[in-house]
Length: 155
Image (cartoon, rainbow, N blue to C red; front, side, top):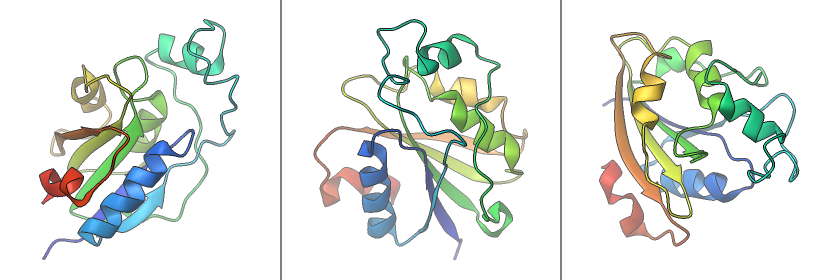
């Protein structure tokens, strides 16, 4: 049986709740991707073109630093990777995470939280952050209501 991990980034707690529920449903280990400098409400103001998140998302090459974690990605075959949708894609901190560890031969299944956006170009934009032998799959964009049925896609 393969070993599975649910890894997630959550700026406001919404994705954290979804990740915890998914990990509980599937029985996976869980890992939080933490920015070295936490995001404030002002940082997340997408209406302000000078806010931290707006500046980061305007530069596809930007990689926000993340806290050092003690996660052994090599121990997992499947990684469920969760994040909020920002500007119709994953936040660039997800690229930081994917580029920090070796995902060779891993299957990465994406899930996201959003008030209404889909995955957009997310998978394509993350592709260059993993080795060619890694597989990236779109899972599901989750809304506010999380029930057991919300996670049947992950089975």
